[in-house]
Length: 221
Image 1 (spheres, rainbow, N blue to C red):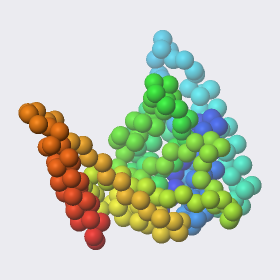
Image 2 (spheres, rainbow, N blue to C red):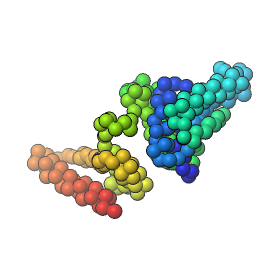
Image 3 (cartoon, helix red, strand yellow):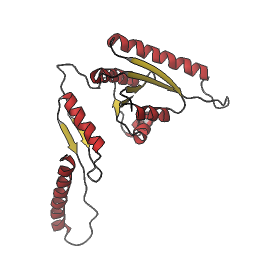
């Protein structure tokens, strides 16, 4: 893993918002920023939608515009660009595995529309092993002095807490000077039998105590 913040750029306002956030984060971490644009290479003229040369040229313009914009706002930041031909999910996952942090744009939609609109981001989240940040346009974190600060939230599975996840959460909370909230959810198992009205409250209390104990043990280090 290299000490680099990498952001996927495709020319959309979501990716530009992600690039802005990534630049702030890279400056805050004092590491280089890498802009990555992926274009799909289709060598079969029967299924080709856009000529490869056109797609590559468009990608170069997208990178150049984003790079110039970031250099104006962050003149001292080390900004690099890279193009990759192939599947966007595979290329972004490969980049994320090598970077300290991978940043992607997100439309922030819910339901079916959000699933399809964020299919690349969702696929990357499911496959990459490193930290990934999704940034929404006009609603991403800022480091202005007067801006309200939120908490860092870590969703924790107490059966497999993951030292890397907790370490990242604690480090980010320390970096931003904010609180860390650790969230663990649990549910009652399926119950069958008579007099469940008396059984459920007792079982709920016992399971809650077990969950709290497991959570305390996971956070003790």
